[in-house]
Length: 183
Image (tube, rainbow, N blue to C red; front, top):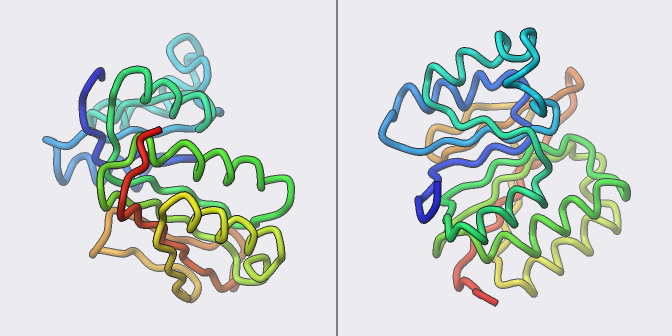
């Protein structure tokens, strides 16, 4: 994928149903499903079967961490339009994941590229989250936050939102990179 543009990079794709539907709807785009659980998918028959719909839709499947994958994209000069990251509970232990995503993504996001991150409303007000929002602004992101209720499909943007706990309201955090900092 050297030098290409990825339309959507979905972090934590799980079953991959959403990104598979997107890829089928717009087969000319490049879609990447990223989840450490996919590691070993070419050799594990059960995982290979589980991921077959994604492969058939042309989704690129990667079984690694976001940090490693973003570094690969930087090396290959690959750019990304949209990153989707579902982080239902944003806790201190996920802080390094979010920090790494925000620190490295300006090097791969296209101008006005976006990161859509969902988080449970109850964990959003925590100090660790607020510190990451400050860091994001320092990295050149414009940050907006929306209440999205219990989960909706957003047709305006290449994103999805869901709640892992029934009845848990979500917030959608949108990081828009207005001025890329290619360091």
